[in-house]
Length: 632
Image (cartoon, rainbow, N blue to C red):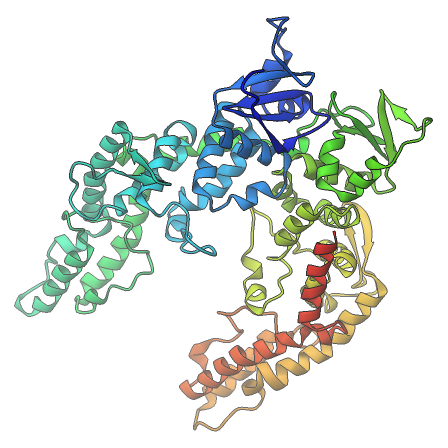
């Protein structure tokens, strides 16, 4: 080798068997890891050596790549480190680099994970378009012109499904008439220009969408109602003002500038017929317009653009080659782990980087008669086979954890294993995964049921909550109050044949620990008292407002709706915007007191929740969780 390229120490594994050289930086990694994740590298390593005098570096084949060193570093970090992808969620440059390089080297699992991160910013449905992220702990990615241009240029060949939303976002970045240089900008300090073919699509799409908006979404504004006469001047003026509010500076209407729930103040003076027609046409027309967005930009329809996503989906958990008794097997692995009757051949250096436990274990002098398997050290692990398999998969596949949201049992197993084997990065990533389902704040709890991935809500069944609660008692105490609170509704369904504390998970019985079962059963009356005396105080103790019998009936209906089958009320069973009553059944005074009590008293009650379960207060639990993470 010449020029002595710099070693990337964080991606230089002593048991690596290939060196990648990008620009003047070298990375010593594992052929088996690259081959398992990339069909490009699998084919390259499988082909016969063309040159017997191939370049070598420290006894390993040297592979020269024409990629940027930073891009290759980002890719390898994503391959080797669990926390890498999540840390890049708002890094536009890194995401685009990963998307490009993963497409080039056919690394599908990382590529799909990047696309999953990008999808909220470039949605394929109208509902998702109106729900686009506005703020995510800082600047929202892909809102600036330069970033949108850079993404659209790359998406043309790597993610065509995202182009309609990307071009639509670019249109909204240019409210003024288009002039030369309009579709150019800066991305991370570097000048970028929109691909000429995309610029042409965008300009054509602008006029097509404007025409669709007039004919489909807002036709009422551009035609006169046959029943109008001289007295309907106010209606015509209201139409004109609404049109002016909709028009961009270039005189074109964006049909998606306002959500379906937007309240147009200018339509208040429309006549009854026009007002009804306006709302009906708008709701139907905007949906129809969305279906035509791809064609407006000269792209295939949505059905065609969406299809590749499903066909390319690869489950990372099934990635490694398996054989009877061999759960995770890299042919060039350097250590064999045994759990029960299952063997896994993996990389010692990967285990050492992820886990101080393994780093200390492998640093110890090994006896001369140590057991080996196929020439590699054999390490016995006394853990369930499925938990070991999940832990190794998490170490070797950074996109593995999201796939576990449909397998809660394995997810909880990895939580316990990451704590036991001191895998800090993995454990921290897991805690973030659990937070939406077992939140530590009232706001998080009130929005808990909306954290849905795919068609299934994780941790909605009693069996999965029991398994998590048992583990959280030892490894994630900050989540225990919410886990126990999630079990409270199941108490009312208990019977001698189906005890509250027992359930079936993956054909096996799971039982809540006796101490936790006692805590849940004891808390129900206390929660009911909180509900009756604090949060829903006005329901049970109406204040005098001269209200009629309708309020009394409303209170009775609300109490009935809030009560479990055994008559107890869980004050946290309802969410922020649906506290359990019909506002129309109450007078203004009663409704005001109901909402004030629900809002303020809920916060107070949440602050005391851990103590109700016999646990330390929130501050102590959160400190314990942080201390455990720091100790790992």
